[in-house]
Length: 260
Image (cartoon, rainbow, N blue to C red):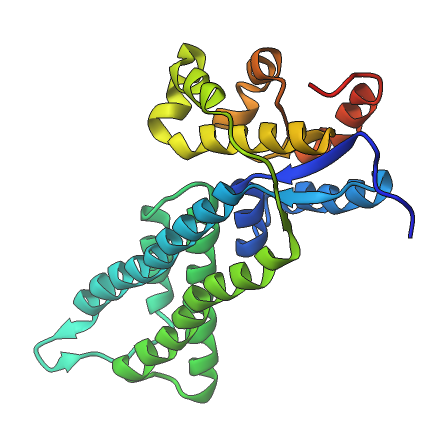
C-alpha cells in the first residue's frame, strides 16, 4: 500500500456525514468526489469529535421529522376519509389528496429529501395495495405505511452507526485562546449564534493540523456558514474549508505552503 499524502489530510464536517446517511441525491456527485480524491491524492480522512456529536443530534431531529411528517399526513388524511359511517376505504382517487398534501408541505435541504421519500413510500404503498384489491380498508393502509415509515426512521440511526466507525478521530487539544477568538469574531457571529459547535469543530481541525503537522482540510457542504466564510477563516485562523468539488485545487495550492 502506498504511503498517505505527506502534507495534507481531510476532516469531514457533519454536513457530509449526514448527506451520506440520508443518501442525499442532490449531494451525490459531491459525496462521490470525496472518495475519488481521497484515493487519487492518498488522503487520510479524519472526523473531529464534535462532528460525531452534531451528527447524533441531527439524526435525532431527522428521526423526529420523519415521524412528525407522517403524523401530519395521517391526521389530515383521516379527516378527508371520515364520514358518518366511519372511515372510508382508500382508493385510487386518494392520489389527488396525497399529491396536494405534499405540494403544500414544503421543506428544504435534508428535510426535503426525507419528505420526498415519505411521499414516494405512501404512493408506492397505495399502488401496491390497489394491485390486490380495488379499495383498501383505511386501517390496513395506514398500518402498511407505518411499517415503511419505521424503516425510514430507524434506517437513519442504523446508517449513522455503520458509517461513523470507519473514520479515525482527530487528535490534539483545542486551543482555548483560538476558541475565544473565533467566538468573538464579528464576521463569524452568525455561526456562533446559530451553530456554536461549528466553532469548536474549527478548533478541533486546527488542533489536529498542529499536532500531526499536516494541512487538515475541512470538507463541508455547508454553504451558508463554513463555505461562505472560508476565505476569512483561512486568512485569520489558517483553517481551510472546502467544497468536495474543489479538493484538487486546494491540495495543489497547499503542496508549496508550510503548515501553520
